[in-house]
Length: 340
Image 1 (cartoon, rainbow, N blue to C red):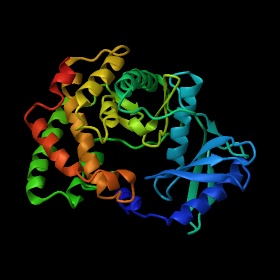
Image 2: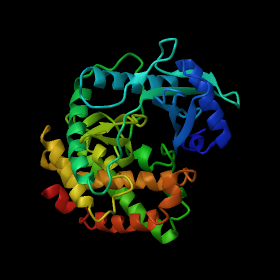
Image 3: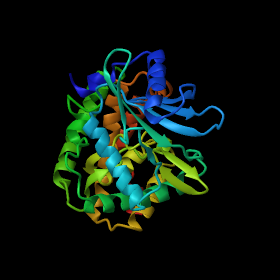
Image 4: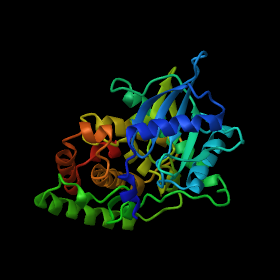
C-alpha cells in the first residue's frame, strides 16, 4: 500500500481519544488527565492537562502505519542533539517510565501505534502582525539547523524520508499526486504539466550541492512556530527529512504562497538565513522553483487530507495555485524578493 493511501485510513474520533488516554500510562500520567485535540492531520496532537496541578504536556499520537519506529526514533534523536547543543529552541521530549523516547501499544483496532510526549511551551503562533519578524528569526534558525545537520554524525539506523521531486509530484508521491485532486480540471492539468516539466528541468540543473542539501525540518510553517517573549520556538519535526536547504523556505510559505505579503515574508526569511550562511546566485535563483514544488506537493496533499482544517478552509487553493503557476512559468514569481 502506498504511503499516500495510508494517510487516508482515518480512525474514528472516539478511537483517537481512547488511544490517547491509553498512551498516558506509559508516561506515568494519571488516567483522568484531560485531553483536548489540537490538530488532526498525519497524527493527532493533544493538549494534556493533569488534574489538580493543571500542568500541561503535548501528546502526539501517531497514525498507525504512517511512520516506522525507526523513523520516529531518528526524529527524536535529532531533536535531542539540537537541544543538547543549543542549536534551536524546541520542546523537550519526555521519556516513558521505561526510559524510552516513545511509547508503543496496540490501538482499538489491534494496530501497533506509537505516542510521543513533549513539554508544553506557553506562547502563540505568530500572526499576520508579527509574521515577517518571526520569519526573520526562522530564517536564521533554519541556517543554524542546516549547519548543525551538515556536521552531525547520523546515528546508526537513522531513517527519515527524502523530500525530492518524486515525493512531491510523482505518481506515488508522499502525500498524494497532484493530478488526483478533483479540483484540477483538464485545462488546469495542462498548465500544471508545464510546471511539472519546468520544475524537473530546473531542479535537475541545480542538483544537490553539498552546501545546500541535507537534513531539514521540513515543515517550519506558521502553525509550527510558537513565539514566547519574542523568541521563536520550533515544534513538530515529524516531517524532518533530506532535501534542499532552501526547501525549508518553501515549507515556511506553505498555504501563504499567494499572500499579498509573501515577498516581504520571503525577504525577511532570507535576511535571517543570509546572516548565518552565504548563498550564491544559483541558490537564490532556485527558490521560486522550490516554492512551486511545495505548492505542487500540497495540491496532491489536498486530495488525501479532506479531514484537515486546511482542506475545509482553503477552498480556493487550486485556483490560487494556477495563478502562481502562470507567474512561475513567466519568470515573475518571487523574483523581486529573491533579488533584493
